[in-house]
Length: 400
Image (cartoon, rainbow, N blue to C red; front, side, top):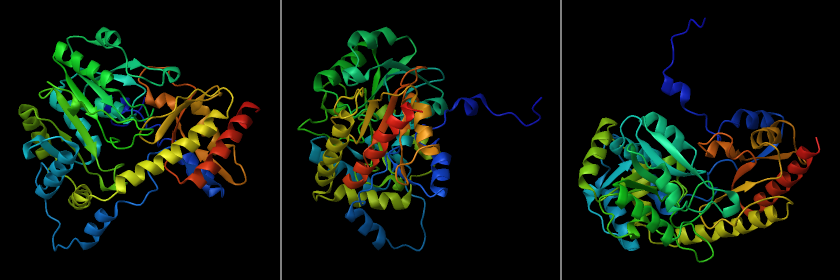
């Protein structure tokens, strides 16, 4: 009998991150002198936006004080200006600044979902949604999409089959992590129509908004008419400005009643990071070509990674249209074993590659068994070397 004080059921059920759980094996590989190419995590190698770094260097204060729970006024004003450039109008009370997009999603879930309420979500999806749902006491109801179809948005019939009296909303993420899929206007209209018909919210995670390729444009939930009271936008500076560690995001809605509830959650945790907001305000006020230059660089990386994948016999992968990920179905028997084996048993001239196994991006058991997420966040020279490792690793793994 275990004599230790017990853990909560919530603590026991929260999953390990598939993005980070192999870190001990990567550290052990490095201790053996092996260079690990990290394609497992969405940490860009691009320099943080210069305007943000300049503002941080110039920040002077004798005391780093508590800020406003809803976010500092300078950042709120910068966000309103940024969204205005995109053609969207917001007032300060429509915005609550959060500790990253992660807290924004949690606040949204907790504001509209009671214990065991349900949120329908196409899978595969950003793995941490699982953790956010568990800590918020709500349930994710997945609709499985496939690599063969390019992980397109489910049909209206598939959504309708999942709607129950406990359904509170639909979660969409476009451009998507881990798939790189970008939903069309028709697909976003489909989700909006279901929300209107069944009295649901739409939580739209739009942190990769500008990173689209081949003249594809992301369609925001804000582009859809007659959804004022239902649309909740999640945003973050992490990827847009290559400032993941600043931990600044926001939740936005023109539903005043909802935002009053979100603000009360924000008050309970006091305030978002002071220094991160200094970076964020400067970044959003910047009107340089930083974002467009980043987008072009990611497209070059996408092209290289995708072309190398297409040289592997048996790979299934539609060309990603956005974000900086691809989820590829590889000719392997088990993605979990393969990703671990690449760190424990494989090297190519003293190098190996770390990727994220696909099952962690699904809520349905057994899904994603042959899929691996590749984050093309390294420069093209390093990506070429990493893909050399991956391709040789697949061959060696299958020949064991």
